[in-house]
Length: 339
Image (cartoon, rainbow, N blue to C red; front, side):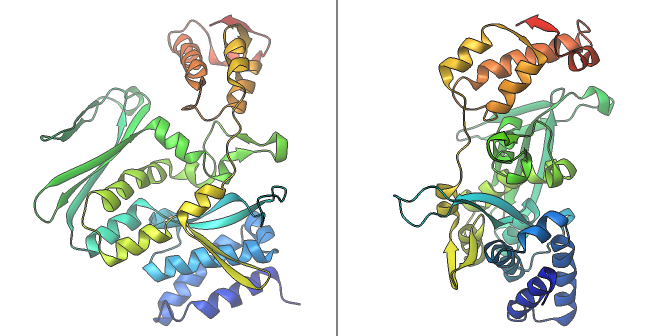
């Protein structure tokens, strides 16, 4: 009997020649694919037809666009999503994990260059001590003056942005806040701890987000520029239909899910009852309770989440100002503070 890795390799190679003609390029692509597949968590997913076929489907889309699978290249990613695979509305929910093809910021950049619509891009990460100004309207402009002091003194990240000079000389830009980036990170199954009812969004980035947070966040402004602010070439139009989509085999049939359908079928984030959250936040909390609330309500942009965010920031400010040591706060869950 073939191993799961061998099945994966054979099925991927069957679809690769029509997309990647050069033998050397095929070999390079397969090496990156096998490196991805040899991750113990991925190897477990390969045991199911649905998991294996969705990973292969995502990889073949990468090959179609000529993208590298190496995460450090930033061209594309193969990422997990939890979707509801029930066949009828009356059926009970059936949550399964599939892998989708996701274009990275360098992938969008390459697509824009190949369309001849963009002469060059610029991009950056903004910190608290930087000067950052956005002007919208007829005379729109984005100004970023980085802090020139020591890296330790620049503060926390606040925004990510991308700018582009179009072939006609017009400058366009797009930007997101750190909260937008966190809301986007929340969509990835890899950013959660635990399983089932114990599954909670991780405060600290994990995996690819921990290694390349800037790259993952910059994908959004680059995508917005390529899909909303420049002329769409056929390749970019095809990319829009592929980015975030998936295909997998079920009962011998290939199921194609475009990005909008994947989003519609994704498992919603469970938000704690608003009244209950407001009541709890109005009291005195220990670090343990604060952490519990954070884990129950990772979607900061939703109802009442700002209440917790404000209080969390107050705690951080007290630590920064020397009114409390972080070690004390983290080491003694029984320590309480009125906030």
